[in-house]
Structures are given as structure tokens and as C-alpha cells.
Length: 134
Image (cartoon, rainbow, N blue to C red; front, top):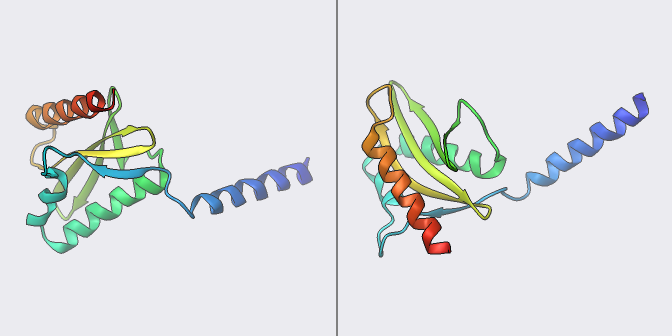
């Protein structure tokens, strides 16, 4: 048994190492006409905040599936990436379609509960993406 377990452990370790060579998901920004609102949104934020949000998006891209506290689900294939910097909270909504993480909406969270307008916008964009693919 020990020898069998050792082989399984080595195989699992090798698989993890191989997976590090390529991202699990591709990343695409929601696009409306020529605008990419999620790409434009962080430009008004400081460099350290942009870096942290980008690092978290990349972590999800390379390690999917990822759970709490980095990612939370809203049902129907809608997820949020959670980023905290000092006392500020940032969220990026995304959906996973055909091994592509589509970044739908980003915002700074100011209350404990996710604002309905932000959630509704993310769901609307998610529907638009799905309709465009069907």
C-alpha cells in the first residue's frame, strides 16, 4: 500500500507541476462595441490596487476552480473575484464559458451586501455573452 500511495503522490505532484505550465482558463474582457469596461475600470485606481486585482484574476485563471475567500459564486455560472486592499474591497464579476473566464464588471464595494445594480449589470452582461455564443 505504501508503495502504491507513493506512486499516486508522485503522479499527483507531476500533474500539478504540468498544470503550472499553462493556465486553466483563458481571459477575455466583456466587450460592448469598442469598449472594454472592465479593462478601463482599474485605470482610475492606484498601481498597487491594480496589481492586486490583476494578481487575483491571474490566480483564478491559473488555478481554477478556486473557492472562498478568493472566489464566491452567485449561481447560474456567475462568480466574483474578491480583492481587499487596506480597508477597501474590490470585486470583479466573471463567468466561465468554454474554458474562458469572461470578466464582466468590476467595482469598489462600499457596503457589506453586493449592490443590486452591480449584480444586475453583471447578469445582463453574462446573458449578452451567452446570447452572442448561441
